[in-house]
Length: 251
Image (cartoon, rainbow, N blue to C red; front, side):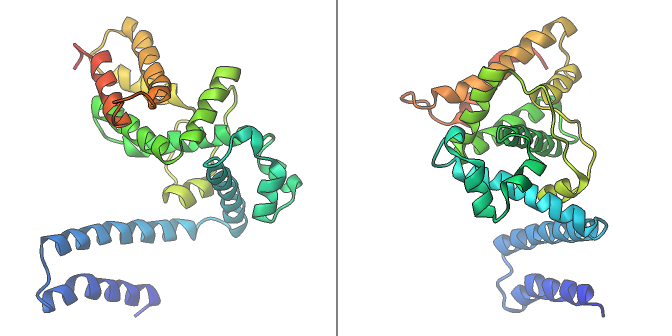
């Protein structure tokens, strides 16, 4: 039996057979078994795909993602303007020159985050009806803001000062695999590339698409600015209220 086959057998034995032998195979263990299957095959698929990517590509992608994650971590305690390329380079044990091989400016890290967010959303809504897709996009965005509000504020600030980013930072195949476990095709871009196609799938007159898009755009980026208001409640709930109001009268 191969090493991978032995691992599969051990995983199956420990997650299914042992609980039954010990008479602890309940509904909760059944659910655990089900989710362990999903996780295992996701990791197995990822491993198989990664094997088809060169080591050089994987190293490049891994460092690019580490740069992003380092900024993400540092933005929990300070603003982007207070984070220097030098301190990020020191933490990652790379030179500043190496950093600039990946990003021309530290603000480009925000663009990269938006691109990864867009890809994640496309994965999230694949095959989902348009209205439910909108809920999923806004729910996941609310989760992201809850994890790191400062990162979101930096994105809003950048858009306010410079407008929608004019350039895109393509995501390589290795980056998609390392981050999401897939090398699926995706539509480069940000909010508009996600939302407008969903509006087109709904039973909405074409002349209303732009006004609805603007309303959803404002909802996404303006609503979180009011989170400090008393009795604001859950951002996800507020998002859904606004979506329902905007789409009132549509299917």
